[in-house]
Image (tube, rainbow, N blue to C red; front, side, top):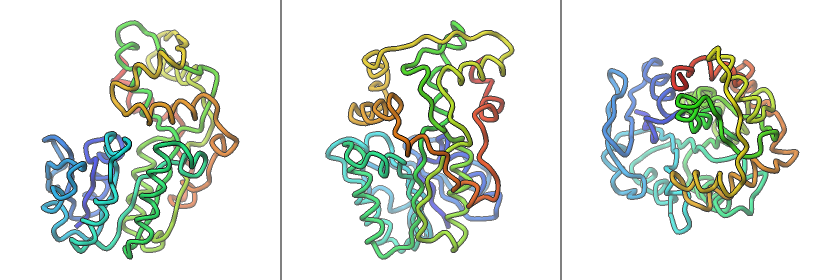
Length: 279
């Protein structure tokens, strides 16, 4: 059995579906009740209380670990989840980390993620680590304003990053959970091209077939919105990256191609599959 945390999110949902379609027994874990694919067991648990994961982990061979936003806050201790996994007999953990662990190791939330990576490496379990950059699905933050006003409001309109489709992350995660060749691998996951928020806006407009205006926000305005859904430390670390990416953060990684045997999907593909959210 494979346990997927964050199973109702942009990565966890396609991962759960892919594993089920591959014939695996899957337990989907989320904080709230949710629909899951037929044949998938669902367990409600809060990762902030690792002991609550024990019913989900019972009999599991592998765990996909995706931290909820509050586990990125100062004082959180997600390493306890790895301890619970080991105590439950889990043999392999695939951790969704962040590219910032490599590119900005001294950011507040990156220090904590690096420590979690180190805990996993030293746990005695089989492991693989996924380090994505920005997610294409972060564009869903703009969905309400696009629907209501045909406006995208974002900071740093002409600063781009090689953002990745969460479906590609899910496929890489499935490969790491199912294929022994990826044990001990640490993969940097990006999309195929650098794309700016202004260019993302144009792609959304093209998919909708109607104009969408781009409105530049200041960093302060952007942070005020972001902290409604994430710790302030994570908002600051994210804004540091999207405002002034380093050469390493602008690099298009070959790792999706290496694992999946195909190029990562461009942002336009993600928009085409999710255009209903912006209508």
